[in-house]
Length: 217
Image 1 (tube, helix red, strand yellow):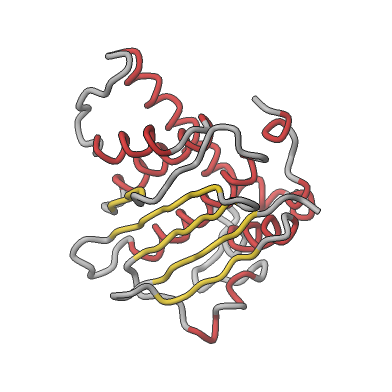
Image 2: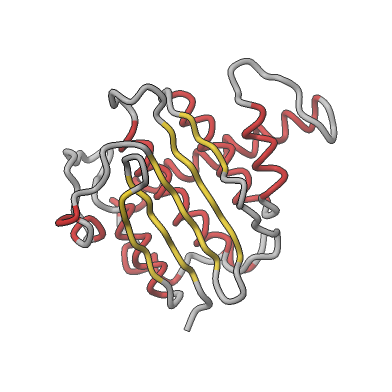
């Protein structure tokens, strides 16, 4: 584990309360599930993947090929399993290329995990014939760039700033599952890293969240 992964991201300290800890348990659980799944594959056939029941092997292979950092890779595999349980296809974009030596991988995990969860909520249970979430991750010259899109109902233009406020949610919040936290964490982290997060319409319907994460100031 790197120093960046071992330390709580600075931006998260603004929200280090019980609601955030409950909210982020899902991300931690999915990452652990992904690590276990990757370990199982490696144990069964080192260097390759066998066909476990129900797991979309093509997408696992894309993650392994295109994402170099072990924790980010594990989280994506965990989200792949979570998406499958909800009847959603999660796929990795062909332009994804994220090396293993990225800075502050823990913050990348928090950002991409919350964006994927948000997208899964947006498409799960919709009338769409094939509910789909697509993820793209790249390291540019000066920033890590992330894109998460879904073919759900989209985000009303009038709400595109409001949804990043803490507590902003169209879903009912409970003590077991607080709402309106994930996107506020995404914004806090990106701003702390001199970056940005925006949401726009997806071509064909749905929403696209685009993130730029630069170096910390």
